Amino acid sequence: MTKGFIAFPLTFFSLVGNCRWLVMFRSNWKKRLLGVIPQSGFGQPSVSHALIVTFVHYFSWGLLTVPSMVKLSETFAERAFLMDGLIYGIRGTLAFIVAPLMGAVSDIWGRKPLMLMAVVATYSPIPMLIIKDWWFFITITISGVCGTVYSTVLAYVADVTAQEERSKAFGLVSATCAAAMVLSPALGSLLMDKYGLPVVVFLAAAIGLINILFIWAAVPESLELDHATDTACAGAHPFVVLRELRKDKTLLLICLIVLLSTWPEAGEESSVPLYLTLNMGFGNVEVSVLVGLVAVLGITANVTLGLVMNVLGARGAIITGLVLEICQLLLYGFGRHKWMMWMAGLMAATGTITESACCVFSSMRTHPQNQGAVQGLISGMMDLSEGLGPAIFGILFYVCNQDTNGPHKSQIGLPFVVGAISVLLALVLAKLIVENVDKQEVYKSNGIADEMKPLTGGNSTIC
Image (cartoon, rainbow, N blue to C red):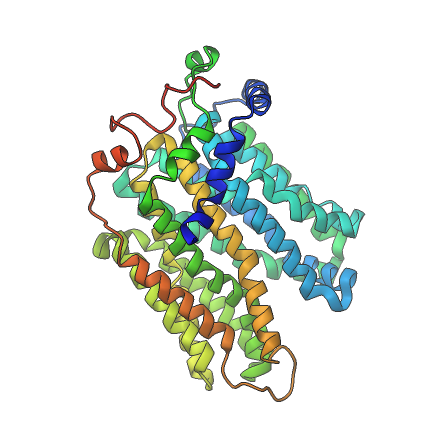
């Protein structure tokens, strides 16, 4: 059943791919889009291009963290938590369904067009924050239909790095994302208090526009697009890729590990500050220091991911991250002293290597021309977790009557314990990972006779 759940977006789009009108529509838009977007940029494709796009993207949105929370509270009042869960739950579900398709499309159209589409879709809600409250939240909800910037960036990095350098590069991308999210929320809150909401929205929108222009003019395409094949309508289409990916049992195993381990992390991130304040007697300063320390250590852990994977291997890094995540969830769930909360925070920081290690492992066993589809599938699992985690934690806190001040029915943080059980299941599955495999056998298991022939091979007759 679980395997079928993960394979749902793959099956859905493989069936949709049989619709001739949709294929013709995709082909027409492909020609128009690739015709207006320049393939060249500043220098050769490099990890630096991806890091700049990642930092600017998440920094600009991080500026709106506090303003959007305030607007959410003002708009929905006592239903703020419910609406927050619905908004990000629906967005995560849409991204879960669409991200694999958009990743597969990037394997054919190129990374740059899909990166632009994802960035534009993500920035589109920003002006609505001061124009129309409801439209702001509606556009956030549906912005997931264009995929995510993160998965496209990882596919871009995979294109421009050798396998022995990929773990380090993926770690740098993850660390850059975390660094942007550490710096920008505090700055956005400070600017809003001093100058008002319109100034923060204008700054975020301006930075977003700069990022769009940077991608358009400065980021070179990392894929070599075969225009001759494209003109002859003999190129492959993403639905073939998604249909074939269902045969890769190891990839489905990695996706399940990501889902089981990231939803508790997402729920924890959304609830820990309030939990520490209400249950553990932390003050605002203590919470801020702990959150900041966790973020800095998380950045450090991801920067050193390459070294960790060289020592432990991909499977060892995944297992280490899962063990640390279980320990910190249990400390949050059963701990009754502040020092336990600080210890849990340290473990949470180092446990963040799990997601990056899963992305690296999947990338290293994937054909170069299928990187987008695979990273899109994993990113879809992460997006689903971002909506699922806060919703599950919120429901469990409500059931335990731990969402208000005062005495609580339970002295155990039940959401954290449930999350630890989920991660324990992920740990059991991680033991099944076979790290040292023959790539020739991997490609054959996916229906590919030749190691150098990607899933998007020239046998397709639909362009």
